[in-house]
Amino acid sequence: YFVLMDTKGKEEKPDRIQEKFVEQKEVLENEIHELLSQRDFSGATVKLYHSLKLRKPIKNAKLWLAYALFHDRKYKEAAHIYLKLLKNGGDQNLNLNVAICLYHINRYEDALRMTLKCPSCSLKSRLLMHLHHKSGDGKKTTSYQKSLSNDEESELALAAVEYKRGRYQKALYIYKNVFDKQNGYIALKVYKALCHYQMGAYSTALKLTDSYLKSDPNSRFAANLRASTIFQTKDEAAAKAELSRFASHTGIGESAFDSQMLEHNRRLFELALEPEATQDFASIPVALGNIVTALIRQNDFENAFEIVEDMKLETMQELVVKGVVFSVLGQADYNDDMVNEARNLFLSVGQSPSERNTILGRKCMASYHFLGKEFKEAAVYLESVKKFANNEEHYNLGIALAACERYEEAEVSLLAVEDENYCLEYNYVSWLARCYIHNGKPMSAWNLYTKVYQGPLSTSRALTPTSAETSNAQESNFHDLFHHNVNSFSSLSTNKTRQDSDAESIRVLKLIANDCFKIGHYFVSAKAFNALEKKKPTENHFLGKHAACIGVFEEAMSSVGGVPRERVLEVTMMLHDTANDSRSSHRQQASKTARTIRSWLNL
Image (cartoon, rainbow, N blue to C red; front, top):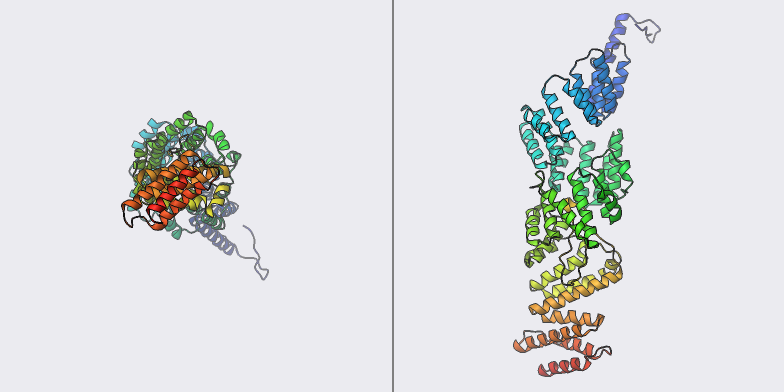
């Protein structure tokens, strides 16, 4: 034993020395258990290594050390300790512990060989199910799934496999059942939140995450999930703020994985994920899909295409982002093969057993039908997830409904779009204008045009547009445009010049002029044709204006007080515009019609 000196310089007795060792050991043991209960595995690891240096370490110190290392994601070090214990005659069931460590470092074949050597037990069945799932052996995965016992551990293991298969609804059902039986398992709130997150039900996911954080406010995983959920709702500023709060938590960044995850999300939230980041975040399963998504948000479709062209598609997210990239580039280049490939990708997600009845699956089916100009079917799918709609879904549903001539519903859906960038897009303006016209609000269509193309918004719109359009050779056909924000991915856009904006202005004017004339809204039709004639004094523009002006005149003649005097005067002024335009070959005709109208109505 060691001889310790008291403050008076006297030797302490052996029994007193033993008491001090026992006291120190008990204090250390309590500290370790406290750290483990707080899930501070790094701190517990330090204390456990210290314990091993004592003459008499705490009971099962090496087992606890391996446990702490494992939960700190230091799987190789944990496996090394388990192997040493086995070599020194430890319990043979520790082979399963080693196999689990190997599983987490992706050494699946080695893990499988070691697992098969172990005696049968519930843990072995659970591990074999996961291993065969990783190897892609569906039959064996299902076989071991059927052999699972009815205990909670087996149910949770099955839920994990279903989640990895992308069957989020099934996983959620299992988590709910276990939670209903064991309300104390509060961590299941996070697992349920994850399922809702993957299905696009972000508000539900946020509520569950917030509820869990009340019990464990320093949870790195839950805080990260919360930040990611906020980011998916398009509130980038709030997501960044949440991530900053997350980074300030005690213990954050202590493990390499946590630091990498933090950096990945920080760059994603700031849209700073570049193509080379595929190597930086290779260990994060969703990183590749997120990198492509970030490139899409930055309109960098060329780099996005380079990544997805030969991407090994393993997750639903990867199928979707490849579909988005192919649909945008295919429409932009009038490449039917790429568009059809995009449709097939969306269809494979939408009809997959795991996604068929999920929000993601239905959005993908909507994309499939929309790209095929099957708007009735697209509207059915979009209406089924209307409860979870964001700007993009309201946008897409509005266009689909309008294409089906359900103008009143379409107007409501389009007006639900709150993002000003979307509201300035040509497709949005043209479809909303058409809805206004068919719903008996022609002046609302005209006011929309002047607000976007002639008002204060017109300058910013021309210089910094965010449009997802694909032009069509026929100016009256607006069916090619669709925001492919499947699973709340960013809206897609292509940069346009002021010249493009002027061309769009003319197309919207033509739509308003022609649609209003067909329905009998002659005054607004005349205004639109008059604006067109000023931009391009062609014969068709004059003839359209002339006919619309006569339409207003006929309305005034047939209904006393039906047309305000000011409108008739404005119509005659439009005709005088042509009469005074030296470029026009219809000056005499316009002047004669204006005099006739004034004469008949005593103006």
